[in-house]
Image (cartoon, rainbow, N blue to C red; front, side):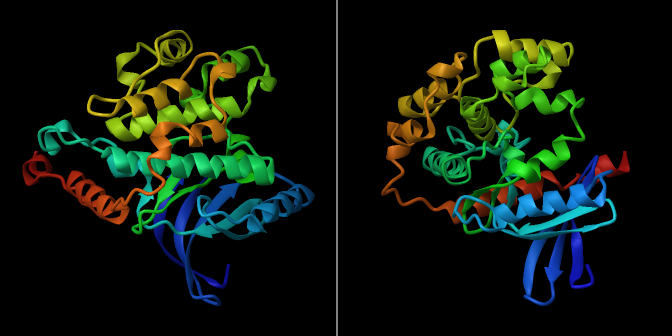
Amino acid sequence: MDEIEVLGELGKGNYGSVQKVFHRPTGVTMAMKEIRLELDESKLNGIIMELDILHRAASPEIVEFYGAFTIESCVYYCMEFMDAGSLDKLTGQTSSDALAEGELLVPEPVLRRITAGIVRGLRFLKDELQIMHRDVKPTNVLMNRKGEVKLCDFGVSGQLEKSLAKTNIGCQSYMAPERIKGESQNQVSTYTVASDVWSVGLSIIELAKGCYPYPPETFANVFAQLTAIVNGAPPTLPEGYSDDANDFIAKCLQKDPNARPTYGELLKHPFLLADKDADVDMAGWVEHALERQAKRSIVPLAEVAS
């Protein structure tokens, strides 16, 4: 800890925080996540050993993991700082009036490039590390100002926090229908790669719409929301996207997990194949999204006065 200079807070949760830090010996700016755990030293050391596996796993679609350490009952792990933040921050709560007529919140070539990055990252985790992500959602997909897309909070690093939050039903809103049903019956074996594929479809819709596809305010309670996910018609992309894009999402959001495509099949879908040689100004879109985000955070003077 004495090698680290804290530059500011990036986020805070029930079980810890994420700080932007500067690591003096290497001169690298990092994101450092703190998770408070009530574990003995041997269990903490076991966690560090498992996190070290991630340290050796390199992929362009995975946030780089620099290392971890413990102080008393806290685990600190340091990872690549993604300076554009998570997907939910880039498009969330953007009002339709902020868009020009006929403009999509996320143009299809950008949506395609982001989707391809997510799917390639998930395939890497499965094929190279034998890890299922288990928590695919916009807050766990990060971008930088260069327009790169990377996954975070998977495997051990993701399970640390969730092990403390088993009763937090809010985490279940990105779960696939079979996982919601399985957990309600205490069947943990219902989770497969197909469940992550469902979460991909839901996350891409949220990115395109700027809001979660099953908005809580439209349901009487969280149980009605979960019932809609299990039994209702799956959500769709907003108008303006191609047939290929809509077909891709429909395949991800099939209620029968056995009918959902594998990552390899998704990467061969016409929607993602079109990304192969496309020239997409990802950095330009990120800057535009960050400018919109900055405008949303400005509170009008009249509101302050009231």
